Image (tube, rainbow, N blue to C red; front, side, top):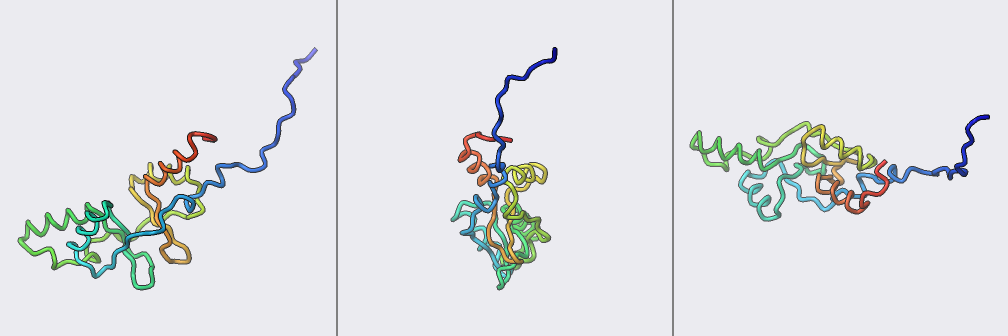
Length: 154
């Protein structure tokens, strides 16, 4: 005599709920952006005023051309002091990080969380048709996790 299974029929899950939790649902779309011709001093003032640690640099067509961060600004302050040069001699375009890695807005939030862990980055820009449409930060991922309250961590 074999072992009988007394479990009732299981409902088939029609759709994985986590697949619906996309980066675009939690990304920031009201971004503070910078232009490559702006001065480092302008960036520093903007970062302090808005309490942000960096932001995307775009051209006149809103195409992403780089990212500028607090670290980039600190490097310029240090070099300016070392070479005894005024900071206004350099623009953002000279100091920004280029070839910026982006994230697809359709990516699952949990996959994005893993990408943050692997890359050690604070933020990822999101492009659509070559244009900057948003940005996802580590804080945005935390907001998604709190919203889900730990349910369905599959």
